[in-house]
Length: 161
Image 1 (spheres, rainbow, N blue to C red):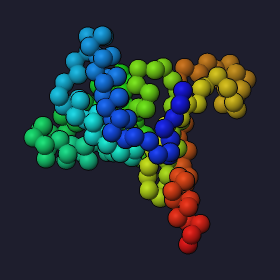
Image 2: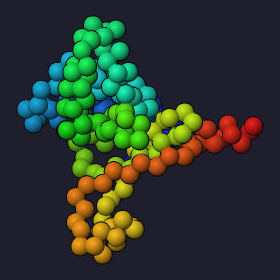
Image 3: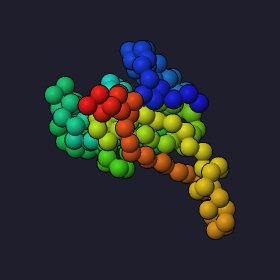
Image 4: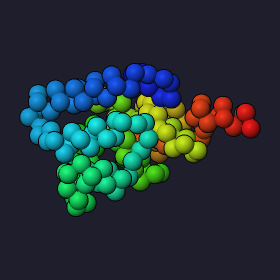
């Protein structure tokens, strides 16, 4: 699994490919990919930053999709439940999944300066956590790893000052 991470990429193609993948998956699985759900996904894809539900709701309201919090929360619940978005607990915010429809255990690299977020994979079956769980007789079913630090752009800026 390749991660877009903090590298430069064709962002327009990134958005179009993700939306097309989610549309095809929903069609194949009989899931309702409503205009509101689609727009929330597009909003999340517009930048690689996590967005809070109320930021998303503000955008939806401005675009005529409704102004009540359940509008945003229902769409976010659908996206997260189906693996099209993730909740970043540290920020109490959401980000579009960079690998929708793929089964994976995400790890999030969160820049403490610009709050950009990169998604990578952190399989639970390897590393220290897996060993600790194994030693305790615990079976890991799902992990979410969130690491905070500086992205390459912010590191460069900090080095210049």
